[in-house]
Amino acid sequence: MTPEQLALIHDRAFTRQRAWSAAEFRELMAQASTRLLHRGHAFLLLRLLPPEMEILTLAVAPAARRQGLALALLDDTEALARDQGVNRLFLEVAAGNAPAVGLYIRAGFAKTGQRPAYYTHKDGTRDDALIMERVLTA
Image (cartoon, rainbow, N blue to C red; front, side):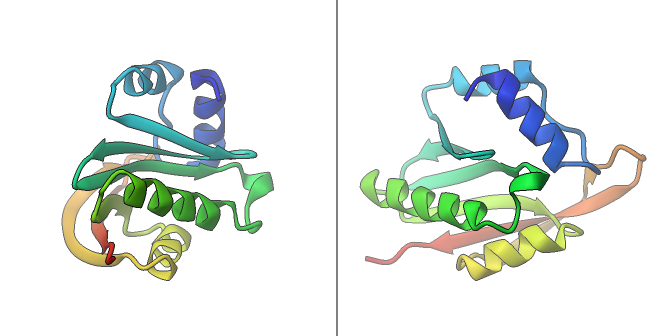
């Protein structure tokens, strides 16, 4: 996927938060530690920092939702993590994004912290970030 395609999906997926630009995706993808996983109109961008891996963003185009793509991408992430010797996955998610929080809980993530008023929405309101992690066992 190109940075422009990623930016388009991200914009459609994140209607309340500011979407990332093609330039931001291009900059992230130029970093050696960044990995991109994608399936159809969904993608997951992560940073590989063994023994940890950070999920930077996960986006599914609205028309492709409820098809299991996000969970499949999280499965792909776990497989990559194990292959790279990673034992801890972590991410931040908007506390008000109930579908995403539910997805991460179903995928085995647990809340480990919170950052107050971390995200600024397009309408100027703010939302806390939940810090979530999943420890991979052998």
